[in-house]
Length: 322
Length: 284
Image (cartoon, rainbow over all chains, first blue to last red; front, side):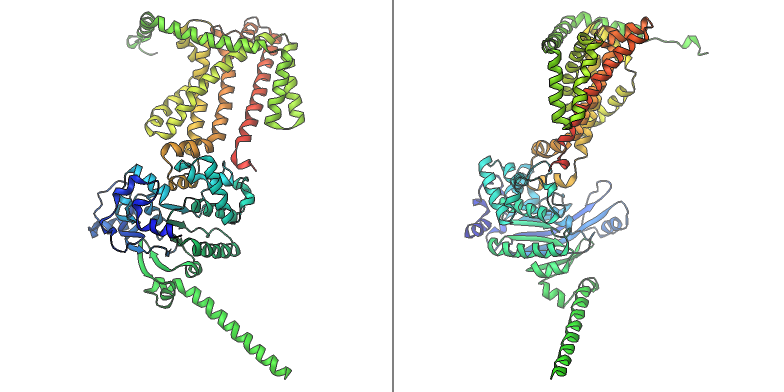
């Protein structure tokens, strides 16, 4: 694990990615954020526009236009190394777009993304490919498994893209499968697996490339509540060993509170509040966040009432026995 | 009536152009023609070398691999016997040789072009209208340029068949690749797939069912065209049909027609069965 830590702080020493070493940001000397997002914008427009984010009139007109969507609006944040950082928001709030901007699956319109010292937004195609192969790994809500490859081949896919020899990648993929408890299913095809098992394969595929950063886009949202809980616990267990930097998108407050070291709440593209989950829960910054936590509070209140009733009933029954 | 003063013909120019082509590049056309003929004859030689029961055996094995059911396998493998009983065996083998040659060429040309259409937008814009035109054009029309450049015989028949049969596999290859689900592609890109890796590891394998459906379609089209191509000297079963039409010999025409239908059914069932096996959704 120590090795991973040093790698994170000295990206130029990381194996297999010599081409991107030159892209170190000048701020690399001091204590470095694992993920740093500066004034990031993503605007979907029908026709290409010359974007000037300072131009408030233009932004306003884009907001009002039906042909364009401002999906990510001036987002700036920093994620510390080894931290589980949660992005929470309702669907359509731009959180999935934001996570895709981090490795430029979606091309940001404006702003800067720096991950472990690599300026992602300044990379050319080749550097970006190398970066995606070694520095980040992503887990998707839709799993994104390849139906024509067996489970073990799916897990080894990232290694295959890197050019790791067949024997070695199979060995490493089997180890990763063991970590998620699916080694018996190695030679099955993804279609014969349940949703929870498929997502375990997705996680194994992300772990096997040994990237310092893990991006998770609502990985457990499609699973039923019991399996979801189980997967969350498993992620916590894995993270205790791995200490990766995890950027985790969800719309589930429970999940955020259970997994997150810190979280940010997003609404229509903007960050409305950043802080520890408990802080946000206790002091919602505005109405939107308050409504978000309200349900959960109601739930807790009801549970408290139930407990109280139960306690009274028990006290009474004890009296009767006396 | 249309005013006759407005009449204008481009036929002389076209004839001149063809004559010029033949004069200037006659040697090249001959060379190409000879090469193609050699390919055809070697394929035909191989096909003629196999005894009739060899075909029964081969069809039995292939259809077993494709369908895995006893009744279709027996029916399919006994079907060619009917062709033999009608005394059409030799002609059927000749037809098969032309079909195989032109299908192989159509696939060698069509699949890469289909991939190119899916990958590069400009190719799609260029080829789509051409393919539309090719498919709406009456098939007889293909005989004309083929005949002009290569004369009569089997070579122009192959060329015409190949041009007629290539569009389905091009179209279905391109369509199949374009319809590959986005999530799988997104995941591949997220793990650092280059464009080539994306194509070979994800897009083509997932488009395979569609590509194989295209192969099946192309084969069927070739079989239909090869009958028409008998008009320019392709021989084979088509010639038998043509003769029967000229002599108004209904019975003879029926026998030859049935022979072609049998070939079509056998080839269709086997290629379709193979295509289904490839579908990743059905693999357990």
